[in-house]
Length: 360
Ligand SMILES: *Cc1c(COP(=O)(O)O)cnc(C)c1O
Image 1 (cartoon, rainbow, N blue to C red):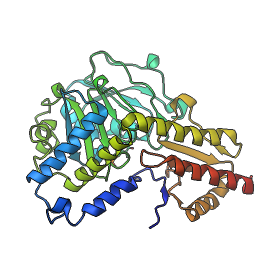
Image 2: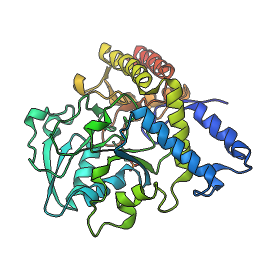
Image 3: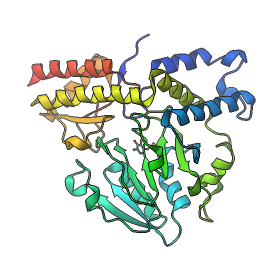
């Protein structure tokens, strides 16, 4: 069996050990004679799988007791509507920070439901930097502040958490959850589509402070009301059972690796190796300001874009997959989530050096 180094932005690489375990348990889960996919979500076995996944995530992120952990569907994008439907009362205003494509999508969707104030935008900085909070135009009594901690496409990441007093902070952490420690108590709500650092696509995990649950607008569909999920253990209807199970295997794996602190050490080493390779060369470049560079998604350009095709072909031939940049940005992008090890980054920088030597 050959496993390539997969730098895909999402759905992204999963730990080989997790896939092997899923494979071993596929046909006959723990001697029960059936796969997890074929179990009733109400069975004792499945409820134990689901509860363990939640418990492990709570442990990993040190989630306080007054927060609910919800496993829902529709990915992170559905949250762009679900958040205002639940948290933005009619006539109220929500503050949003625009730092790239994902936060912009959240803003556009939010506008369908009420007043959205773009408190700050990285637009004038070409989205290569994050405006400092001193320059934000905040609404004093905003319903919430929304931002994206890691812009997966632009490769721009907050290394700080906004402080807005009593206004609940809602964060899209889809592409950097579990990559380093965070203090959950600084947030009203954290959400993350699973396919970057958690598991299969389609699933979205949300961590919500309890006082923010039960405020949905009257028109909010039952399925989109956080209270429905919270009151029913995320099983009002049939949840994405297999994705939830796989997420649980990933949480166990992160615990075995030493938790988010260990992940942060590994991720720090990975990004340092890659950015220092880019910065040391005249051939490769990354435009993001140093204090906003993402540890998870590293976009980079070749000095001559006519070489892009050859670079990608050579990478493919070496089992370095999915390095093509997002269609809106061009160039290259290496996504180096938790499941992508330092060995993958070492293989990538070795190839980059080789390619530069040949073509510079
Ligand atoms: C991938 C991603 C999304 C969209 O996730 P879906 O599950 O496809 O809806 C939203 N925000 C960020 C930051 C992402 O990386």
